[in-house]
Image (cartoon, rainbow, N blue to C red):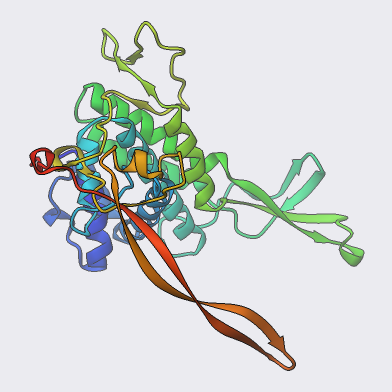
Length: 340
C-alpha cells in the first residue's frame, strides 16, 4: 500500500526493539534489508515519526485539513498519500525531513552503531570571520540524508508513474530542507572571551524552522503531470513557472475537506472550533464551509493579579470569566455521507 512507510514507523514506535522486520506488512525487499541490518536505527526512525506528525499538526492547526487522525493511530496519513494532492506533497516532504532529523540526532547522541559525529569536520575551517578549529560534535546530516534516501525512496523506485515520481521529488525536498538550516555554532577562547581562537561545530536548527520552510513550499506548490517519456514533469500551459528541484509538486487537486471522506483523508470540519472574528482559514465562515456554527458559553478560571511577595513567593487571585466557544455545525443529513 502507498502508506506502508508511515504505518511502518508507527509500528516501530509502538513495538520498539521487539519489532520483527519480516512481520511488518507492506515493505519492499530493500526496506526489509535495511530494517534487519540496522534495528537500532529503525528505532530512531520510529521516535522521529512523532516529531514530524506533531509538526504537521502544528502547521495546519487552523485549517480544514489539520493532520488529525481518524482513530488515534494516524491512519489519515495513509489515506492522504493515496491521493497525490498538495497535502500529500507536504506529508512526504515533512516525513522525509523528520527521518533525516531523527537519524542525524541519534548519530550525534551516540545511540547508533553505524554513525556518530560528522568525521569530515576535523582540523581547521574558515568562515566570514576568519579561521577556526573544528571541535565538539558536528551533526552528521549527510548520513541522515543518505539513510533516509535509501529507506524512504526504496518503495517509490519499484514503480514508474507520476505518483512515484512526485513522491521521490518531494522526499528530496524534505531531506534538503533539513540541510538548508544547518548552522555553525562556535565557542570563543582567549583573554576574557576575546575570540582570538574559536572552536566550531555544525548543528541542525530546531525542527520548527524546517516545518515553517516546508509550509511555505506547500503554499507555493506547483501542479504537474508526467512528461511524455516518463522521466520528468510537465506543467499546464497556463502555469506561471516550471518547478525547480526545491519546489513541492502535486498531481491531483485537493478535496475541500468540508465533509468526512475517508478515501481522501478528510475528517470533515463538523465540531471544529472556529474563530468568529477571523476572516482567515480559522474563521467560522471558511472553517465551517458556510454551514454555520454553534456557540457554547463556558466558565473559565484563570490566575490573575499576581504579585511577588518578599521572600520568595508569588500570590495570585483566581479570576472567573465566561467565554464563547464557536464550533462548526455538521452538514445536513442528506450531505453527511461517510464515504468509505
